[in-house]
Each structure stands twice: as structure tokens, then as C-alpha cells.
Image (cartoon, rainbow, N blue to C red; front, top):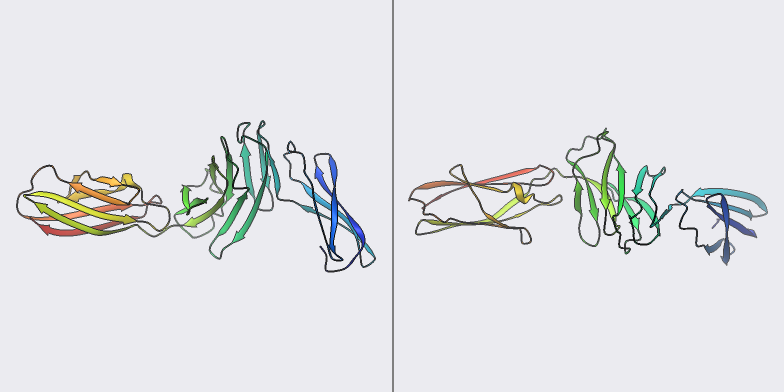
Length: 273
């Protein structure tokens, strides 16, 4: 498209290895043309669009990199996208069928969102994606998150050994990737304590706003003695049922929960039997 008027039909090519494939164009109006092409699914390098046109009687030419990446189904590869500094790696069993990967980047006012499309193709071993990170930032507890058809899910809380990339493998479907800071601890709430003939029943719920609670790090102490609860990860509930009787007296309940970024919450309650 052009703000000026096309005075001749433009000629457009797509680079495809050592060839330039012509793109058949159709006019929408005097300022815009559209066309489509089916490039080779074996060329892994980044492609360029080369256009030659006459606008308002002046000959011009322009080249522009595309965001189309070929992902083959039978060979390995590694491609770096200079515009976004994103690295895509794959082996010969990454996908069941070849496809053209498209990458977009948008900022939502908080962080950059990297969208990988199409998001409806089932992967095999998947694609290894590395997202750039500036370690000059002052944020703490940065993690790489993935969003498919649901909310954001933490992929990794740590960068690579050089500290300049966060890497994950998408082995089911493509989607969105982003770096978020999670500095908020989990919430522990709806704590209920009940005793019957000296046996205790303790229940509570938990939630976290981003990285998710690490259920292996949920701890319950009664007078500083660790007890083992049952954890329902799907419903975000914790239940402790004592098998032995507690003598009458005063007790202190302590519940500790930690999210997957290491933020810790602790609540204490006094109760009597």
C-alpha cells in the first residue's frame, strides 16, 4: 500500500533461498494491492519481500524482512529473528507436519508480549524458544510465562547461564510468551480449625496472582511441630485431619505457602482445645 497513487502495477517478489518468487497481485484501489504465495517449506532462513513500483510517476524499490519462518517436519534448525532478538530452535521431530511460523511483538503497557502463530497446530517434540532479557532492569523475581487457551503459566523462573535469555520448549501448541515480575506472595485464607474429642481438623484455601503456589512448599506447623496435610491442587484447598488426640491446652497454628517464584506467605493463629 502507499499514500501516493500507483501509476503502474507494482512487481513484488518473495525471497526463497537463492530464488525470488513472484507474487501475483490484485488491485484493491489506486493505493493498495494484495497478493498471496505458497513458499517452499524447506527453506529455513528469514525471507524478504522485494517490491518495485511507480508511485505518482516516480520509480521506487523497497526491501523488507518478513516474520515468516519455515518449521520443517524432518530436519533440525536454529533461527534468530534480529528484529526481536528471539531464537527459535527445533530438531527433526519438532512437528508432525511442516508449517510457517509467524512471530509478533506487542507491549501491553507492562511488558512485551510475543505471539507465536498458528496456535492450532499440534506439535511433536516442540520448539525451543528463547526470549531476550535485559539484566539491567531493576525488577526481581522475573519469570517466563506462556499463555495458550487459558491464563498465564510459569515456564521457568530463571534465565540461562549468561543471564540474557529465558528459554522454554513449547511441545504442544504455540501461543504467547512474556516476561513478568512476580513479587507478591500467595494468599492463605478461609482458615477453619475444629476439634472433636481431641482430634483436630484444619482447613484453608490458597491462591496466587501469577506464578502459582508450589504445593510442595505448603507447610503446616502446630506448636512448631510439622504435620502433613492433604492438598487439593485443583481446588486450591488444604486439609489436615489428625489421627491422634491432642491434649487440652493452648496451641499455635502456623501455615506457610510459597509460590513458584519464591515469594513466601505465613499466617499464624492461636487456638485452644
